[in-house]
Length: 458
Image (cartoon, rainbow, N blue to C red; front, side, top):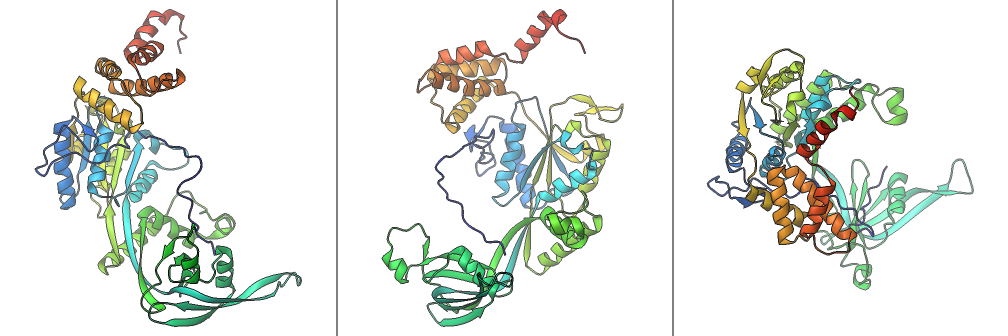
């Protein structure tokens, strides 16, 4: 049986990646669902955030069934940030899956299969299970060994005799080779508080008992110290597992399909999961929920560049919205009147009209210079970049003239330029230098037009 070990929380070398939306903590609304200019990492877009706040309230009350959310606006106006903020507002246990509309096209899998899997990854299942366990401080341990069946000169664990103590009682138990081997592998000795699953035999080392001789003697020790457990040695405890419907689908598919491939490599023989397996999983989850053994946490499926989906994918999403087990579906696009992929039909946003009709639409607006400046200030703090006041003004000016994304890119480049020059703060000269070295979208277009005759034509 595989053992579980904790990884040290403070490694010697740490690689830290700052994502584009790591600073988003919520929608930044007050108790009346009014947007505050700068709050929870959000800046500006007050109307869009207030609209999203009303949607979050409807979701929590279970009144958004059968609808999707469309976020429409020019590039770089915070559509993804609003989707992330909605998921943050819904709770810590809410799954958030982000994908692009282009990800559904694969030579190996059907579009509908990819969408089904993404939808089911967004539905979290909180499973509560009562299990019988032996739990207590290990006072004595006696492992018996026997000759190896294939090598008489080697000894292997045959059985183990344990004595466990709690605040109320002390009990001795005997166990087989499986538990003895886990105790050896985990380095469990007297004084450790352990937990043994009475059904599966899985051993968990919870830490060092503070009442034990070791716990009182070793002051400098990396082992976690916990008090001696209360109650009986054999007890029922509640365990909580967080899975998704996609996880349950995969587990059931492996059990049912089996075969030579899964026997040797642990995978399924087919790339797609049968509909009957998913129906059986749904039925099982409903029974758990009805019996109070599980709780459903519908998550957020955010599909960026949704105009890249075709008519078949849009039709599938429209049908999926009417199902019982469905996440919150958020579609983002920066298109105006565009052709629906796979057809000659032009439609608003590049979406079918019937899908638009059953959706609530949030519009985002271009940022003003003050909002750009505040976002750059937040990003510089998130990336631990010290920024001169004049440098911030210059970046905000560039962002208002070009785009927010270009200004954020220049922020990181200017920080690298300052670091190379051995300066502890980004100055306006650093910003000016990287702005001269790189081109924004308008400058790139002008450059290509100027040298068009020298470029290759495909």
